[in-house]
Image 1 (cartoon, rainbow, N blue to C red):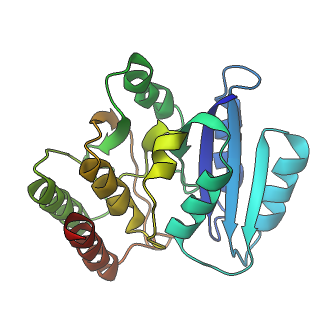
Image 2 (cartoon, helix red, strand yellow):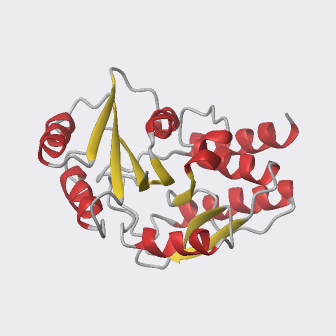
Length: 230
């Protein structure tokens, strides 16, 4: 069995995708230790050509294509369905996060100290997208902590790592960005232990391709409520 599967959802990320793929495969410590599953969620730019080149040049890279855009959540579920690793991680292709942090995130799992590990962002002055972006993230995280009687720092982080069978057991249904909240809520409802590790983060601007909107924030709140009381 492969040690780690990284699922990379992609939608029109031609400017950063090539570097993101290189960073993932270069971080693999040994042959057979990693597989990268790229889910092309209906890209219409040069992303498919970049993915095709990566697949042809490295057997550890696989691609699954959605003919039309179905949303980040749907892409993650598709990737997890095909994951062959003992552990699974999500890694966006936008270079906001650092691949090197995944090793540190895995440590509590390997020690048996947690069922899932989140990479919590610090939102320093040089890395935050905007005041309201940080306030929104803090707000939904606090709301989740209240709903589930827990204490977390960052439920919307992309860096979430856990055993692949645990990931699959969550029965995820959200198609969009609210899947981050759904993952958290499902874990807490199942009584899973979540461990948080500080990670590096540099938010990109709207011009660079930032896709989150205020509407996504309301979807996150709705998802948390649905998962808590359904």
